[in-house]
Image (cartoon, rainbow, N blue to C red):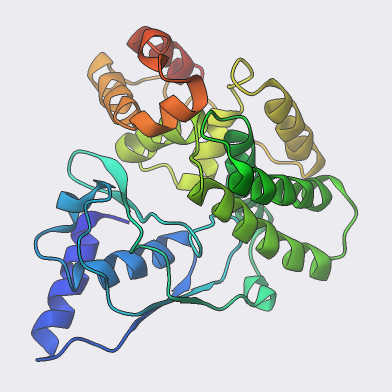
Length: 288
């Protein structure tokens, strides 16, 4: 979702009543859940939502907000961020005030999702686990949640579960994967997929998959397992989406990606700036 969408919703709510609503309910996928969190925060914090893209910039608690996911994998129902595309950045509002006050998890709400969307969003959860468990920010909380979610993902995407079992377990994997990154951070796949999203409008789940497919040097075991899951479910990812981009467009994607410093530090370490060069990122994007 865009920061402009958040600002319009907030304006409509403020102009439509002399008092704030008692709460905000987000029912849907990750984008709707992030919108609900952002609107709840911006109703009690002055200015435009783009001014709060970053870490711990929110100073006032938002109004009561409830999340009801209808697709599993993003972890938006539990994370401390709202992923937003602003005028210059794709970056979340990361704060201790962001998480929902209440979450309702009902696996039956995920019925009817296409196989591709189920896979892409489920892989968001899987990639959360891989990036969290291999990152330098790893701690006892993130490790416990990440390992639980990773084992569930293996069952879901490589096992022989019934549809009902798959629904139940993926909703739990999403929750645990989201908790894992809430206590740590994501990594290279997310940092680079944000560049794709900002420039090309690539949706988050499929963007992560497109990037992760080329990250063997960073996550050899995770990517190998990802390719097995992809093959098992007959998923064919888009190819050549960066083929005809200009140098200026590559620079835009690289700028967005490099702005996500905590993600790179988690993935590579404190000296990541000495290892991740613009030419290296351009070579990786060129393969996608």
